[in-house]
Image 1 (spheres, rainbow, N blue to C red):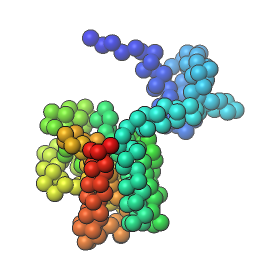
Image 2: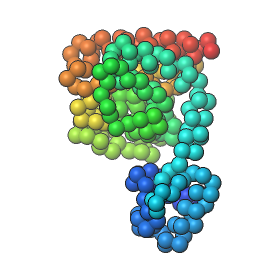
Image 3: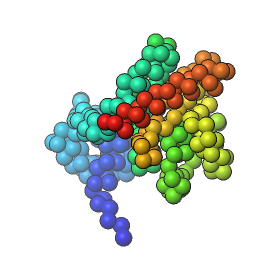
Image 4: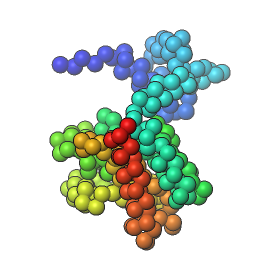
Length: 250
């Protein structure tokens, strides 16, 4: 039985569309979502009255009130408070971009990002959601999930191609996940963004439940050879060990 409330679905479709378009006029929004302008106006007016969107010279934007909910959702996770200092330390010590990501509804969301002195600017920011199979962070998490949960995620979201290097074959991905479980960390070799490599490891509770993953990212010309294959994974595993100990005793 489908218990979805259509008006709620439409409300969030409007919010997502405004975000994807970087703001939109009533005419543009109505066209994008296939809704009469009068109906779209009613939704926009309701969202504006509740202070979730703002209007600027005829263009509607997502409002910062959503930040209140996002910050609350992030701060309620123990992993955020405990892992942040270690992620910051990784960025400082390596000079690269360090990240903390968690899984929710089968996708990965960045909770924290720290930039070292040489860190590159990439498209993702805190709150960005990504496909798990296309990132080292996500693959580290997938490798740690139990088989039933892992298969449910892959069935629901599939393996969409992000770059020519993205793994889009399930058997190939499952073989990679076996390797990740054996060595304790995952690689992403230009699989989400061309020119970017990443190494990541999952963070688990003392009961074995995956809490998230931590990574170091950088350009292919710097993340290569022994640095990519040995030095950075070792630093990462040391950081994860500290985080897991602190989680256990928090």
